[in-house]
Amino acid sequence: PFYEIIFVTKGKGIMRIDFIDRPMQQGSLYLMQPSQIHLPLFSGDFEAFLLRFDLSIFEEKTFLENLSIFHFDYLCVEEPSYTMLVHLLSALKEEYLTQQTLKHMTTNNLLKLFLINVQRLLPNVVNESTPTSLFGALNTLMETHHFKIQTPAFYAKKLKVSLKVLNHTVKEYT
Image (tube, rainbow, N blue to C red):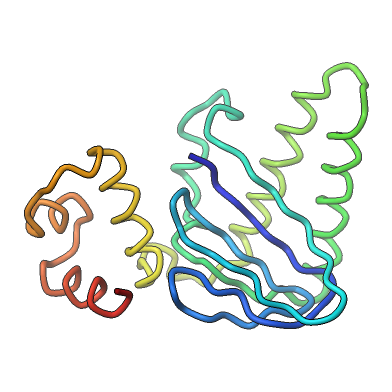
């Protein structure tokens, strides 16, 4: 399963994530967990950076656990942060395309630096799950259990939410 980040540098439209439409414009940053459903719908010219990675890229498996960026699925990045992220992603792309020594280590560190800077852009309340990330987490949990039928209470307990919140979220997105 891959995490996916899309950072829009040109274009307009919408990004549909777990059946919710988000605006798409320069500075739109989408943070998708594995199994989140997404579809970009844009008109005209469109340019973006696309990062797709799994946890195997990180030597310390807990690195991503210390970030809460995937509790959000959308951010609108403005200056000066926009330019800083574009520079980081450009450096990451350049390093990815190179054949230099220590390429893996350098790309890994640039990705970590990017993720840390995205974390710093988040609002202070970073531990609250948005409904779309809850829906994505439910999909991931169901995938982990090989889609065996479990009770809603089982999933609510695993997701650390009330049964009422889980039912409301599922009804809203299905």
